[in-house]
Length: 330
Image 1: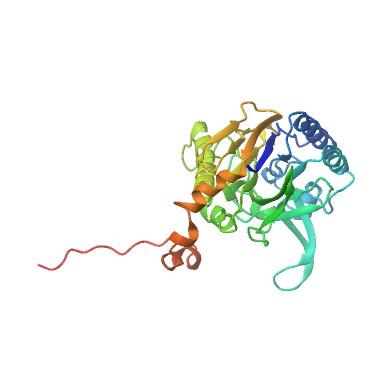
Image 2 (image 1 turned 90 degrees about the vertical axis):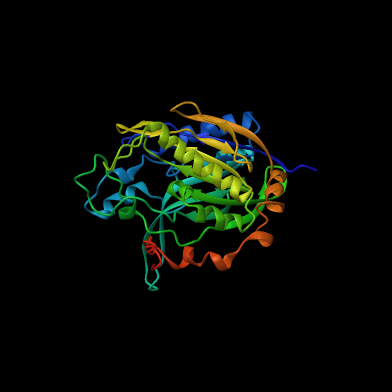
């Protein structure tokens, strides 16, 4: 019997800096209502879905940025979202800025800040939590940049690894679920760690600008989209999984985000794609048994992986120049 589940990507249009949580949550609740009418059983929202993409704004006093974060879920501001998922019996993925009062690597308990996403069951219980690992950008204000990208200032590197959990969703007793956030999608190592745990459904939120703001060379808008989708399609194909990849879109605080949310199958095919720069729901029916073909043939990891040849991947961080060939002596 096929293992079918209906998933939805709930793309959000821009959330302006001046808008409160109530505005974003109200729009998300309306998207959940729409998802329910269309039969969606799992709904995925973008990265940092509750606020504008605040890492573009510089706060000299780091603590001033705490207003963009959540210390508890549900909070009074997010309670309507939790009420909606209970009402409609939908599993969701939510991306947000998290403050966690927990020990760091030295054992000191302090306020820690993460770019986080969670999977929430229809009961309101947290099924799985992930914290973004591949943080792009920089720490200090960069006067040469048109737009700041201060993720490294406001977030710590995620410390939960790339977890996968099997949990009920929709009509299925168990779905192998994992998450990535934004820049993680460009790193094949992240997908592979999920694939090694037999992930079936990857939930991925992102906020990606239409332009490369680092002034280090031209990257056309259409190539930005291609590079994003190429990474997702390759990750799904090479790890035999589905992905729901969900964007923010449109002009947010004067800065354009490129949208193009997609749902991708284990063959690397795009099953559905958003076509607007505003709130939009795209839906696809996924037969999770499609994951078995790749896993039993070309990507049968047990039969074909050669870990002894991959040591450089985990033992080396930066790239190094190769040895220089010299012709043999005459």
